[in-house]
Image 1 (cartoon, one colour):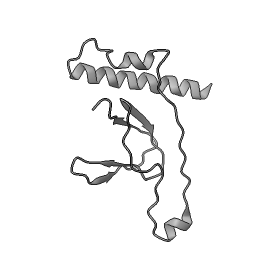
Image 2 (cartoon, one colour):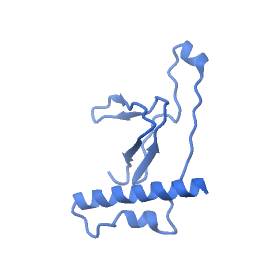
Image 3 (tube, one colour):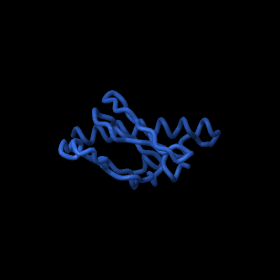
Length: 115
């Protein structure tokens, strides 16, 4: 029940964001993007990734990699932050910027399909 409630809430947040994007881009109707998330045949996914700390590698100064460098192919990604650092975003000049962890925040990535 908890996962279903969480997924429903995140889907609602994503719809609000997508409708705001459509509005700012002057795309009508406002639900042009969000309608796909609300469709029963939607391929939206709820995924849990957990990367436990590895003190042995930290002590050896290895760069820890969780999910690896990638782009998000979908329209939008909503990430729940926690107290673990590691998320980085690639800037237009190709440099990487760390995103500080904040357990009270969500991070929204615009995916390849939206770009």
